[in-house]
Length: 129
Image (tube, rainbow, N blue to C red; front, side):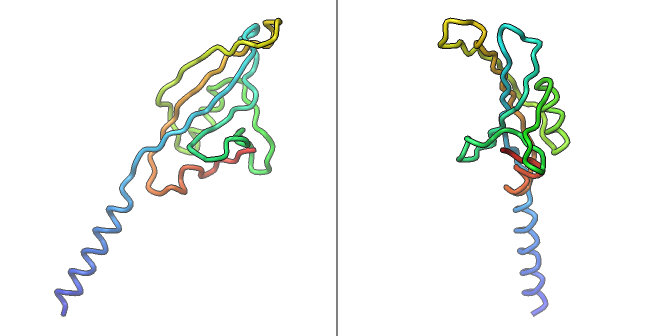
């Protein structure tokens, strides 16, 4: 009887340890600034960590106010406090459909990664609006 109990406990422990194996998840943060003034602040930064509804994905504080950042580095530093780290980045140019070049944008996308053990940890500490 004792052997059976020990075997059950060992199997449960092994299953629990396997379930808590860390794995890597990714998200993107996207910021835009005016192409005619690259020194302009990024402003709001949108996050995509695979959620279905991307309409309300601007980073916000716990009370729901949109967070504004001077640069993408500020946004990355903010997310680093929740365990995210830079994986890759790219920049693209978004021309305006208007005659004026004043509405052209530079779009910067940073891909971040984080090691987690449960899906709930993906959005831990992150609020969006």
